[in-house]
Amino acid sequence: MGHLARTLGALGWHTEALPLRERALAITEAALGPDHPTTILYRDYLSDVRQMPTGDNDAP
Image (tube, rainbow, N blue to C red; front, side):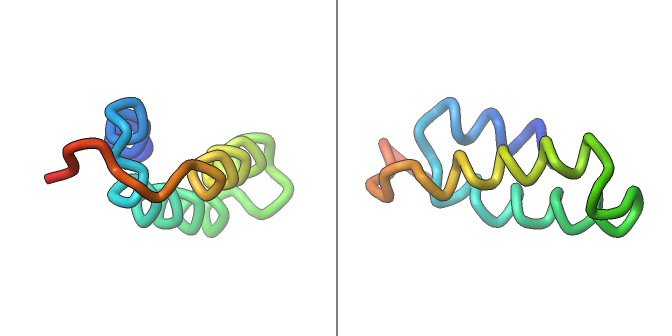
């Protein structure tokens, strides 16, 4: 899920990447806990997507 979100973000489809990043974070946090380094990394990824412009480039 995280890989797909990364690909969508790289293509400029940030609106589509956002819910995937949110879900990946929720799964990771439930499995590893809120203070695990991977959870923190996924939280940073989600923050990055939220800061992207909302106008998608040729989104499906």
